[in-house]
Amino acid sequence: MSAAEDRRPEYLRPGAYIDGYRILSLLGHGSYGAVYRVERDGEQYALKLGLHREASADPEQTDRRMMKELGCLIHLSHPNILRVHAWGRWPYLRDGYCYLVVDYVDGWTLAEWLETQRPSFVQVLGLFAKLASALAYVHGRGFLHRDLSPGNILVRGADGEPFLADFNAGDYVLAEDVTDGPLPPGTHRYRDPRAVEFWSDNRMRPDARYDFQPADDQFSLAACLYDAVTDSTPTVPARQRDSPRQDLNSPMWGPPPAREVNERVPEALSALLDRLLAREPRLRPATADAMRRELEDLATQPGAVWAVPVFPPGTPSTSPGDGAVRPRGARPWKHWRVTAGAVLLAIVGVLVFVARREPVGQPDRSVAAPEARPVPEATVPGQDAGHLPSPAPPSGVALPSRPVAPTQKEAPAVKPAPAQPVPQKPDRSRPALSAEVLARCATVGVFTAALLGCPGAQVMPEREEVCPKSTRLAMEETLTASRWQGRGTVDIQQPDEDAKWGGTGRLGVFRDGEVVGRVEGPDYIGTLVYGRLKTVEKDGRLFLVGRYTRAKFPDGTEIPVCLHLGNYPLNPVAEGSKRGALLYNRVSVFEAVSIWP
Image 1 (spheres, rainbow, N blue to C red):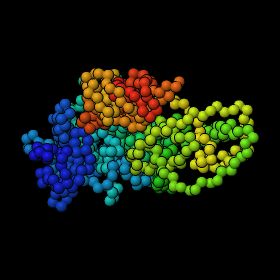
Image 2: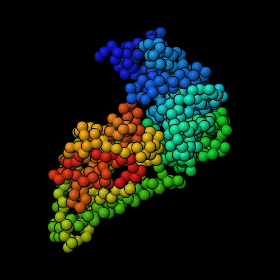
Image 3: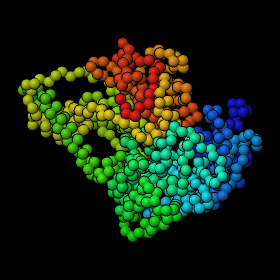
């Protein structure tokens, strides 16, 4: 490592020093900064260091944002806002990396606290009342936070005290304008509906600027509270969820009442959230301090409903309170009634299918119970709407599934099912259902039924899937949808130089499963895209389908995407392809879609 490299933030290790602060550990890093836990004079702090990425079009923009954050923090002194203790440049005073030293909070982000501690409604209300108090103080001093989200709120482990953090997008009167587009940096899910509408109307005007108001911050805090009482797994990324969460900031209509998503939410709190998230700011509490008073009033309400946990400890990710999209007014028991009906129909289909397989006059042979063997645990990752469905298990094999642990973030890749022989058409003279088969299949579990030869439920045809609105907005905020089109490498494990020059590329061998590609378009050259490939058979021919649902830019920024591989809904493969080994160009087209083909 060169002398120049060991002074770059990316290469700093525990034990290194930054202007007298000894690094203890790396707490996290993003596109333009890294945060370290440091120690000096026996005290621990958090040191935020700005990074000048080579991929950044304007490295000085990072410094300007940090100076703006410093301008906010040095004027704010509140028990629930991180204090700034020092600032400077390192290792050179004139042109080094800018850094800030703030309080170190030994605890969790708000999302982590909610998921790991499973607080009661009283605890949640008390915490948000303190956050509303801090926000009222910020607004009273003439400042705006502009990026309130569960990731920018910290909770101390020792006493549960909350803190507003990360004023990187903060603003105040006479502050330098460092915004690059119509909206300031922020988390889309927690934006005010008026901001979303402004973006929709002005996204093609880079000179347009949204007039951010204190009401926007209040809406963001209210949206965090809504998620706190309706989402049992707030740390799970969108791309790992079974279904997208309900929009909170649609300009047209609000989210469903919190009590409809989580029946444990008291009526009074659900009604307050309806007002806090109203589309019109005039229908909400006028100030953050008014919001604080209403939260404190609810926190002192008598009754056992306020003392119970928002979600019981050990709540699985498939809980009705997971924040998944549900029609307005639909109760969780209705959801389960529909599911039960589908399961019943599947069982009937299984029994009829089995009966048709029973040969005429063949005596019923009893099947000895197999020797008990440990069954490998199967972990099914949550999927965004853009993910391809997992391959079906081989005939005659079924493994019981188990809920994914809330802390689990990744799952091992699932191997594609081996090709199965095409079954012969059943003899039409075979009888309908026999009592023996009915008794045998209807009284056993899924795993035992598979061992007995009872086939699994028939797979329904895929329905049209829509790219989540939040994903489309994320792509539009980064690049217009039309510019999310270009050539690239299908799999970085099979590169081809022709990708850089617009050539057709050589043939590669592709299999079902996870894949990482690289887009070579002029606006995002070198961007990695993550997705899945799948083999589809139609009319005796094999086709390749690819869906990429996450993009990682060279500067480290990641956003969800909906990119379809190829020029056709089903990409023809080269002659000589076989299931599990499709021959397809290593270089292909990536195209943004709003509806998956």
